[in-house]
Amino acid sequence: MDIMSLVNALPSVAAQGLIWGIMAIGVFITFRILDVADLTVDGTLCTGGATFIMLTMAGANVWAAMLGAFCAGLMAGLLTGLFHTACGIPAILAGILTQLALYSINLRIMGQANRPVSSRQYDLLVSQQDVREVGLHNPILVSALFVIVIIALLYWFFGTELGSSLRATGANLAMSRAQGINVNVTKVLGLMLSNGLVALSGALLAQYQGFADVNMGRGAIVIGLAAVIIGEVIFSRIFRNFALRLLAVAIGAVIYYLVYQVVIWLGLKTDDMKLITALIVAFFLAIPFWKGRYFDRWMKRGGGDRA
Amino acid sequence: MLELRNICKTFNPGTVNEKVALNGLSLRLEEGEFVTVIGGNGAGKSTMLNAVAGTFPLDAGQILIDGVDVTRLPEHRRARYIGRVFQDPMMGTAPTMQIEENLALAARRGKRRTLRPGITKKERAEYAERLKILDLGLEDRMTTKVGLLSGGQRQALTLLMASLVKPKLLLLDEHTAALDPKTAAKVLEATEKIVTRDRLTTLMITHNMKDAITYGDRLIMMKDGQIIFDISGEEKKKLTVEDLLDKFKVAGEDDLSDKMILS
Ligand SMILES: Nc1ncnc2c1ncn2[C@@H]1O[C@H](COP(=O)(O)OP(=O)(O)OP(=O)(O)O)[C@@H](O)[C@H]1O
Ligand SMILES: [Mg+2]
Image (cartoon, rainbow over all chains, first blue to last red; front, side):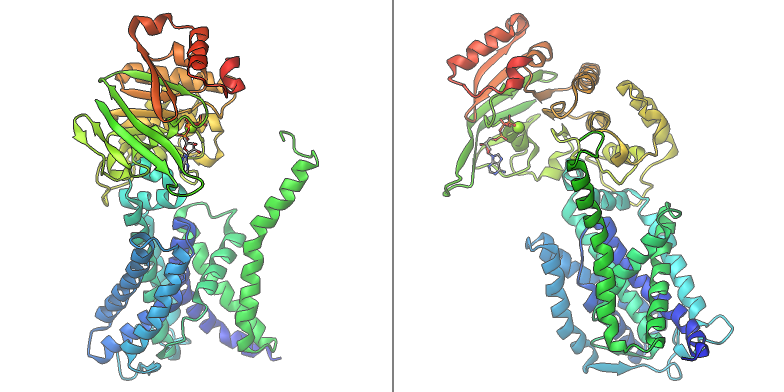
């Protein structure tokens, strides 16, 4: 086990972690703000990458292609949102349906299961090849800038009247309706915004790794949740401000990738990583529940002062 | 101001759990009237309020607010006319948001929510001033998350939110029932203050007969989804708890809860 090989991997960990961080911020919007677990993202990540590549190949400017990817994500979120609100399908199931539909759609977009995009041929925003180069096109710098701009925009948005109504919807449905908020609209809006960001992340990821693959988003939701949870566990005591909480999510994604790299360096197979991720996320999701149960028992035994 | 015409609601029709909750109920409220509502468990009091608020569609009948037929308006569209305080203190506020943010949400009830700031400096000052009427010291804790407040504080805040934009109709569903007697008295006092100050048309459900007599200028009693007793004016002022108990007995109501008799 050569420590240098791990150190060598660090720049890539940072870049890839930040790109996944954008996806994780999208997951944060649904999971933490809207209080729904949206499984659409597993499909949307690829939709973003696929749309970007196809637009680029068709000669679109890189920013236009990014915008196109973002809009494709919005559409995916809209579909899930309509399944949920207009058809009354439970949010989780609505997400699964869209995710499944997106598998076919992604294949349609790409025309095949895998599409390469070369930074030599096209003018891309990020590329793995530049990860050790010093300069404005270094992918760590570019993705960090993306993260910062996105956090700034979200911070502004969730402070507006509309953004506040989204937060209220996630916090208390009955209250939101009583205050005149059309919760169907806010839910759809939140799902769209979230999936738009996930698609953006997918577009960056496709550029970074040089291809989009129909399976690239498999398990993305769990990685996103892992990033959200890691960020909260580590920073929740010091990061109270909303922008900092979003930053914590992005850092959580980088830490996830670091752990990922270390585990591989220790000799585990990449294939086992999904198992490990699932177990870690399950563990952290279970903590509040276990805490509650332990607390209840403690109360019943008469330990509570106002039972 | 409010007019209910023969409204009907049956829950779970055609099943063993079928329950006629509102049975052709009619009621007319004049502007500025403060009506207390009493009745045994399951009489349909909450269902009546929820029908007005639009929580579920009616089976039959019509609801008019200020002459406007709102029968088919969804809940969030009716919210522009209606301020509400629920029985459950958890239901009326967003726990993960600050006191001032909750008030700012309420201040935009019935208005389009745009990309303008969710709360402004000017509003903050105004809310601090408004919170004083509750006499709970909340004006010094404007940025506290509402989830950290006690049930009574949350209920008082919900009351203020319901009346922040003057509603055409204030609906209170046993809003002090979950509170300890001292806090309940305080919230009721604030209710009286606000209703009187703004001359709000109010429907207040209560399990406490004394409160039902003390507050408001009209009292209605419900049973089996209908109004069986409606009293106002001088007659209401002379009303005693014993009178009400008699009415209950005449109505064959035998499941009076302890709470009702004791108070
Ligand atoms: N959503 C619902 N689904 C099915 N049945 C319901 C529903 N809401 C109310 N009911 C039934 O309708 C009847 C009237 O209920 P309602 O809550 O209006 O009574 P209430 O007068 O408010 O009683 P309480 O004093 O206990 O609050 C009850 O028998 C209740 O079980
Ligand atoms: Mg009730």
